[in-house]
Length: 59
Image 1 (cartoon, rainbow, N blue to C red):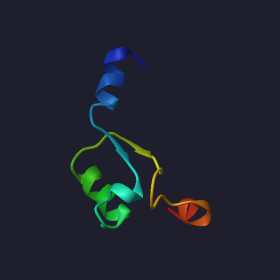
Image 2: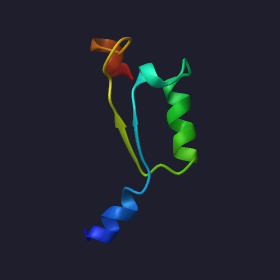
Image 3: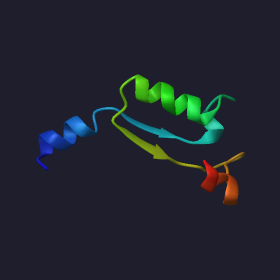
Image 4: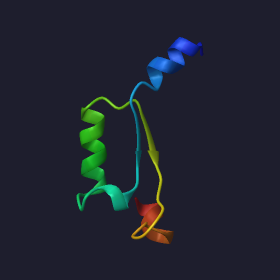
């Protein structure tokens, strides 16, 4: 993959954790982000309220 192809593939990158969804369903937030044009997604669970164990695996 060339640098330009990589740049296009990563043009809109969302890093999200369930605690920073503002009380909304993380699935709904991700679906809206996909509809809005994200090209890459990273789930990052950390801090107060972060999902762990089976709940994290389920998400």
